[in-house]
Length: 345
Image (cartoon, rainbow, N blue to C red; front, side, top):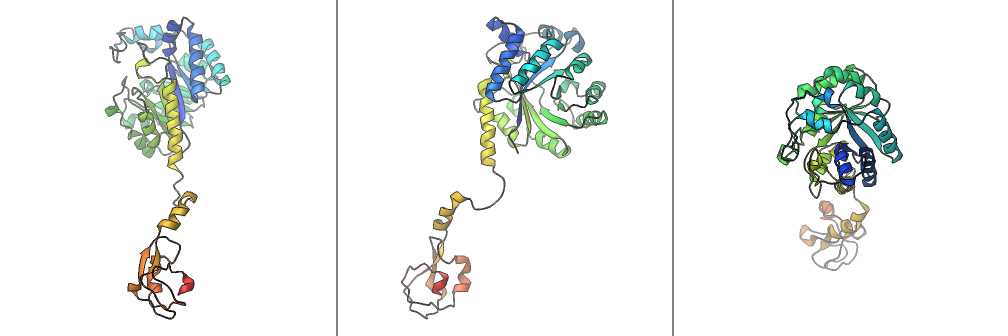
């Protein structure tokens, strides 16, 4: 497996950074792209929505309100819905100028339509898994679709895949996801990655992570070991900022750690071919065993089993050939502890 494709979910965290630094949200979003590019991340992802089209005004919070105290979804989304086509066009070009891919999750038809010429692929939120008309609309555009499948049953994933496929989408990536912010490690259930790979062998499978980062980024590494080809995680420049997604996001150092882990995993994973490596040849020669004489023998004497012992090094006749050696006569006088070679018998 090649090193996984890594998506930094900028989401709307840059709004908070803009306030702290006293810069515009667009400048902050560019700063996020800068830092993600330096860390080696492959794709910058944002979210495109308007509060009035994504949620009714009284929809309750479903996140940890001790971390994000806003009580309704509408109130929260209203804080972060200021960008439109022009801003995302600017960010698209900026990400590409930094060598990164660009995408943004659309949450309404208008966003899906203006993003069509901007995104390298569509990312669809778990929350729209059952929004079949919306899935069909996006699937008909002919672009790759990365679909998070959090908080769903397998049958719902199968239905969503069928809708996208029937609409003409030929490149679908399923992202295992747990729709809890943050996700406790014991709820992560990364084995679902293998379940999705088994049930959908023709699709790529990845993981969208909401676990609070640890020093070793173990969750993402484990997901990669279990077969995730795409990895997505929320991105922030300051994990201590209050509100929204900072409390379960990774910062540039976290992402750099994860990417280093993936390279290490690729290094130690190897290619699966069982052979003798060049570095093993000296040990193979010196640590394997050969047939060695247990006594002095004269030329012409016939060797018996008791005359032989297997000892290191492995430069003589291998003990696997003991039956061929027993019963043969030696060709010359030999001393005890002589390592037998084929010219001696």
